[in-house]
Image (cartoon, rainbow, N blue to C red; front, side):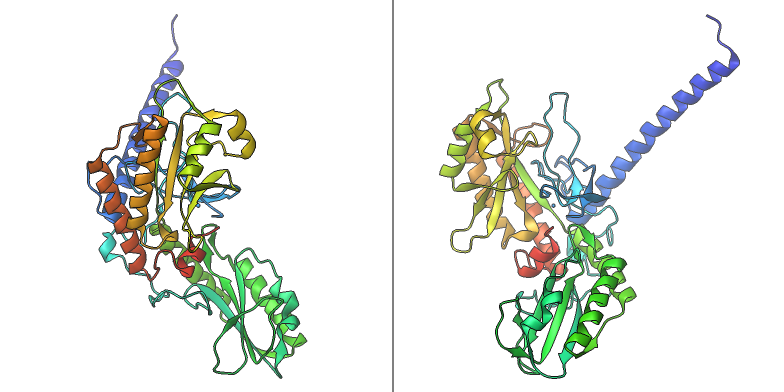
Length: 405
């Protein structure tokens, strides 16, 4: 069939467009890999896979029900990772329906393309010792103070105590001008001469928006005359800029690492057997569709176990369904001593792989040997060091606030 010059021209234009898109995508992938390598001093032989997800309005392993609004990229560890608050799930490795449930998070716009050791907090974010959580934290919170004309009880703050502003809101009070701060609730007893309302500037849902900060100040302004109290309010514009800076800083050091136990043969792992093995290993089924391994003395969750198929585990599904694999997930910012916790998780993953007749693999289903696991442990160490360089000690109340939903 004879084609007209117009048809030939359209065909050629289509081919050129497709080739251009492929070249652009390849360039973007190389660019992302270079950023990841620079940020974490990664070894070139460790397989990387860029994340395609966006950051949630927060979790790598993000909790269910979070919204994604900012893209994030994976900090390359051979193992798979779970959904993150600041990112999205990776595309299927092959046409089998299997999809790595999570990626390790890193910001699409790093503060600087520097090695971990050179990361410094941007202007406006100080690097003091991590806060204990028992007092206001001016480095990560917008703080409004109220000085009542005379001492009043916490009940006078009822409207403020129960305000919902889209970010964590904490109230503190003190009974003397130079006294210690006490975290308040509606049941707190005593009378206080000063109050501090503290709104978190950033979490895995993103930075506090100007609208949220405006609402915060407005609520405080309406509450002040009711006490009555003098009020000290920061500049909303400056606080919004500080929130954006803090959010970008946290996105740069937000890392989660996963280890996948997979069955390659057609036989699947029965849900009832998986639950028995998981509970015998110390896991407990939690809300959100995953198992949690918690520290006995503190109750802090050290790592989690989830379905490799991106289907939640529930009492009912475990009774009737099966799976061909599970993912162990370590949320680095949320645990104290991340390398030690990684060692615990690695041991638990190896034992479960042996018990279930599975294999420990990376995102591309390649077996993980001790050398690859050692490289991954180094990455976990680097991630913890990067957090400390930015004034965020892993596992502390400050870290839990910034890297929570």
